[in-house]
Amino acid sequence: MSSYLGLVSMSALALLGIGGVYLLARTTAVAPDPVRSLPFLSGHDPAEHALSRFHVRWYPVTLIFLAFDVEMLFMYPWAVVVAQMGAGAVIEMFVFLGVLLAGVAWAWREGALRWV
Image (cartoon, rainbow, N blue to C red):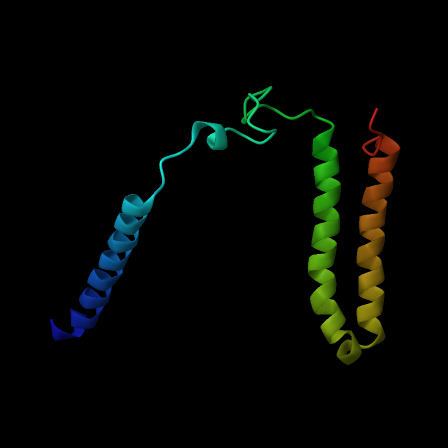
């Protein structure tokens, strides 16, 4: 039982800390001002609901953004090890970029980059 004493005491301390921070937030909170609690646009009423649907043309743009975001995700560690790996790493990166470029070319051909 004494082996669990540290676990129980840390759990109790964590729960007390969470409860203390929650209590502090509840006691020091400022009452919301109706004008400041409205969305942006200088307090004007929103034109649509916050959970409204987006137009379908934004989804291909989002996918293209994610493709470039993943590209950067893979290029940072590659830049660190490219000197150690040699020419093979450079060839692999150009193959990877070629696949992404093919995806962008397909999206361009399908009209995903047109805004009208």
